[in-house]
Length: 87
Image (tube, rainbow, N blue to C red; front, side, top):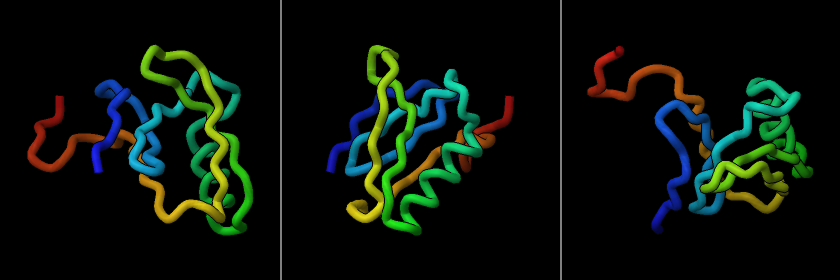
């Protein structure tokens, strides 16, 4: 499966169905709230509205149906990756 890449080096992303979305941190929701809403949707099999950016950095909303998703990966860009040196 090929993953669509739209993020930059410091972007927080969510990977759903093989597509990587940049989480839009310019909204009124902070990243902790967004992650909590995604976790809640997965647990309760409900809908989460996730603010994201497309490849041109346009604001969009990802409607995430927690009962229809097998797996989600959230990259919070928390430090260097294995093998990388901290700046």
